[in-house]
Amino acid sequence: TVRSVDKEEQQYAPNLRRVQSLKMNFFVVHFFLAIISACSGFAPLQGVTVRSVDKEVDVDLGSYLSSPGEKSMLLLGTYAADFNAIEYVQRLRYYLPKLRYECGIQKFGLVLNANPEAAKALCEAVDLEVGAGKVELFIDPSGKAGRSFGVGRGWLPDNEDINPFLKLFGMLWGLGAWATLPAVIGGYIGNPFTSQKWIEDAFVVGMKKGRWPDNAVELNEDGSIKVNKFDELPYVGSWGRKPLELATLRLQSMIGISLKQWDELAPDQSALDSGILTQLGGCVVCDEQGEALFEWRDPGICAVANFEDILRKVGKAKSDSEMEEAVVGETR
Image 1 (tube, helix red, strand yellow):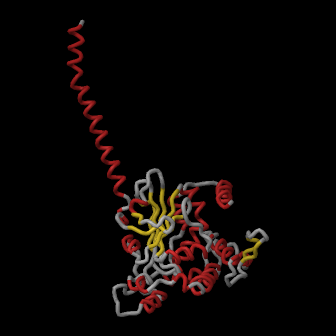
Image 2 (cartoon, rainbow, N blue to C red; image 1 turned 90 degrees about the vertical axis):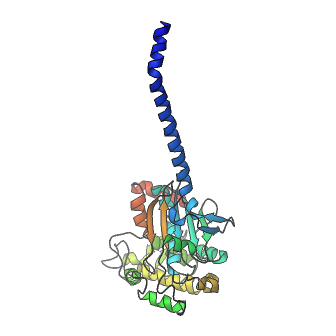
């Protein structure tokens, strides 16, 4: 009996050794894959650092976008007085609870090509809460993070003989920024299909801060919207984005933020020399491994990412009642 057991052990020993070897190889492969995944991050921004306004430390954006167990969103804004930066912050303020609930994004970063005071002033102007556990505010006065991401640099970015403000004027007509005119005109003619409730939210903030035009919406005593005057337009009042609605908001932002707060928000000379006046922005949403789920690079002035596209691409379908409950809970 002992001999038969020994024979069986000798017979199965090679197979056992193979199984153990396969298990070890499997463990080693997955161990190294985990290390590679943890070290890789979002490749275009790997090794690119920006400054945290709240923590006053440098942050590697590639690592920031590859947090274990967390989806991350990063907005690469422009200088603080710019139309694109203002619209990104306005949209983020409104869509933040939806991005958390529908898309499962747990971490939000906002990079502005500005000094700390200008970056904070813009966020205060649109009532975007920043800091620990909210939106993490970063500064990159020279715009190197955006260039590493591949954002547009505008018209004649390497020509140092032309005044940067003249380059910016050319961009308003589409030079180096082909989508500027379509984006601006779209603000006037509206869009019957896609809802843009963030515009109403931005109007409310602007009215509470005394910005003109101040007659686009009427508010209840608690600050909520009583009437959106654009809803009363004949034939087009039911459109997702009404004619002149976005154009009016942009006028309010230009007068009440860009021009009125220019001294606070404007880039300094060193930033101008780095080309940030004509540099455009973008955004990216990454999964837990730093793989991009959504990427956008602005093709023109006012041509920022449509957050409804982000919800459709990254989000999960929810009922209207569930979505309303989540948004109300977020704003309490």
